[in-house]
Length: 395
Ligand SMILES: Nc1nc2c(c(=O)[nH]1)N[C@H]1C(S)=C(S)[C@@H](COP(=O)(O)O)O[C@H]1N2
Ligand SMILES: [Mo]
Image 1 (spheres, rainbow, N blue to C red):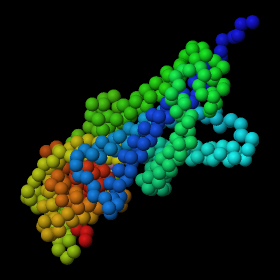
Image 2 (cartoon, rainbow, N blue to C red):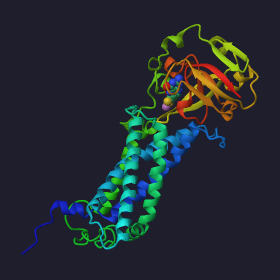
Image 3 (cartoon, rainbow, N blue to C red):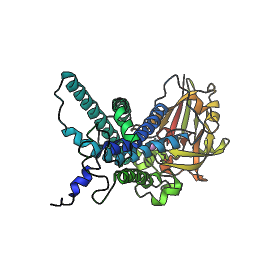
Image 4 (cartoon, helix red, strand yellow):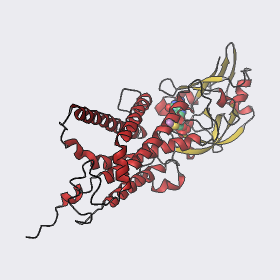
């Protein structure tokens, strides 16, 4: 009697194999490694360790590292889904009972994979929620995302080390080989020939996963790459917002509409007992400079701006602040996580660091920080404080 054609479910289960899991895993590993390195960079820029002097060039440094961070995380989402799909049947594999050692090893592997999967999902979910400006949690996003990053990368390294023999065997044999290495659940695949049943081959599945990852990046990366803006349907449009630059927190959202428009606005610059107080007109009477610098948000969007204003160093000279003084910046905004920030000496000294008064040749719009905002090279957007009212020299 002739065998009936294979049911569709079988041609799918044939796709679940170490060949697919390891190839998708390589791409996933590249994404996680990229997100980890760029994430640590972003963390250090915001929480500078005392031993580290931060680079101020190239001016677009953070634009690139943070754009990569968000792109790598975005690409990881479809890859992780395919990867989990390609291995989850192992969850139902029999527990080895031949020896205590085998049982313990099996359980250890299970636990380490559970930690890795949980950490990976947590990072991707919190990352996506963060870039969509939705903060449904109580905990601090940055410190938690940072701590879990170490758990994710640590368990990933353990996982790769443990699986190395399987990974090597799977990567060195042809992807659509009907007889993959006997290790790791190859048994049920070897029953069928690779070309049996219509539809996707393993190679096709891996290509589709990588293509989906690329598509996810293209759909969002227009936030930082102007060329992609028109096709980035899910990206924050980096050209939107007053004066061609997007706005994260508006003046209304920050509760500064009245204070920012008050003619009695004064900027104080304080160094111990010395201090000066300047109106916006006083600031405009000081030597003006123009710089082209990006705003690069931790959420991955970035946009170039042409800023005009007074050099930070010139302002610090008014109170004779020491060379490379560290400063504390205070905003008119009364609450919120970004209403006061610190700027290390390498940035206060930099000739490109301005207290900006204009953007695109016009007075700053109130949403971009009127009457005055900080703009410095190679800095995360969160530290480009808007509506600045006070500059304190730290000693
Ligand atoms: N006072 C104050 N400054 C702030 C913020 C804020 O919420 N309050 N947001 C920061 C963030 S997260 C970014 S990305 C930039 C965005 O600047 P823009 O709105 O001019 O583009 O402003 C920064 N400066
Ligand atoms: Mo931001």
